[in-house]
Length: 106
Ligand SMILES: [Zn+2]
Image (cartoon, rainbow, N blue to C red):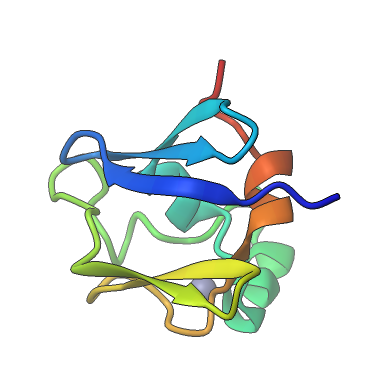
């Protein structure tokens, strides 16, 4: 049984709250979500990078700017994606992926 979001809320300017349909809540930081972007390009960049992380810092001065997306869209009924200048439109964050990567969750 796949757990889906019941609500997706902007929590702060830096983070997002998902309330899941089982009642659990998770806070995700946009910066951390951006780091784990599941799109093919970012996967390839991470694989090539020595640290296993995206070679972002050159392009995006993290911490200095808000990573908040302009909007969050549902992809079918299995994923969301983030629309905004620092985000990849083909980065589909499936709900299973988000559940598995509750990096900032309690
Ligand atoms: Zn990406």
